[in-house]
Length: 349
Ligand SMILES: *Cc1c(COP(=O)(O)O)cnc(C)c1O
Image 1 (tube, rainbow, N blue to C red):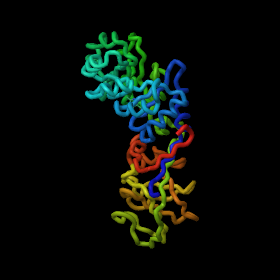
Image 2: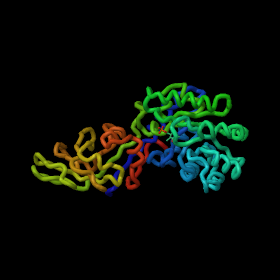
Image 3: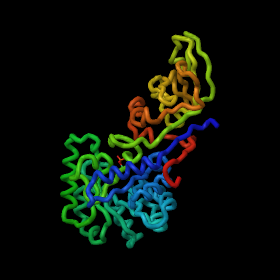
Image 4: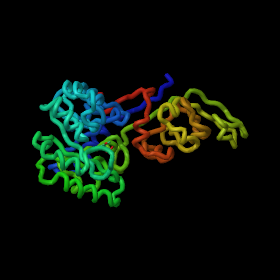
């Protein structure tokens, strides 16, 4: 089989959830964000593992994702939808008991007309200018909305991964101004906001990337190992080039392994000649361009070439690969493609 194997450690994900839960006080509930197929790791399986760890409130970006999570979890846990109540969502919300986070007066009207008895939350914009009602809009509808008993008032921080950024305090103050005295449960923080401290915790937090081993949660356990099978090896003589554009030229007689996996699998072309693949504890440099399905690796110094080399693992996490690719761990995780076999350990699977 040429497909790579993505080993997903559900025990590490559960431990990361518990650690982020412990980072806030007993008055703060910890939710779990499983949008984008749980950041590429498999929403159903991951959500079940997090429910086993104690999570009761899940967040997705779109109603369709909520349906998949509901099917995995069954009745009980609350599943909230960040994009709110979109045109066409009504049957999904009703049949699968989803909780839309309403973002505008239009969404509020749509929801109250279509599903007056279905729980909802309100998303407020406190300065990110992406989702949610702004101050004036909220002022116009707050009385009506609050009379219908929303289950949550939430907002999202734009700069929480930069603790000293002045936008954090500004957004916190705006969130207080918009929600103090409402007596409705409140949520402001994702992974980064949890790490900003108790002022940012309110009643519920919404960690995502930290569960999956990514920054800004520096103490996260790595949750993924990605192994790519070696398709063939060859000897390359000094002066010979490897891969498209011959961007790497051998300076010594080299043994080059071609492994299965490439930019179509989320291993960005920008990683060409930049990272190592690992044979256990031994780094082997990527040589030449990453192509759509294949990567070439200098394995000259290995005593023996193993059947597969790791691109993600204990020596090189998603953020290290992200930095080499000029992006963030979130994008590496959510780009991990459908061709990998996903193998789960440490949970019900
Ligand atoms: C994605 C997202 C989260 C989770 O953010 P992380 O940085 O991955 O913890 C929380 N809330 C909202 C509104 C989001 O869009």
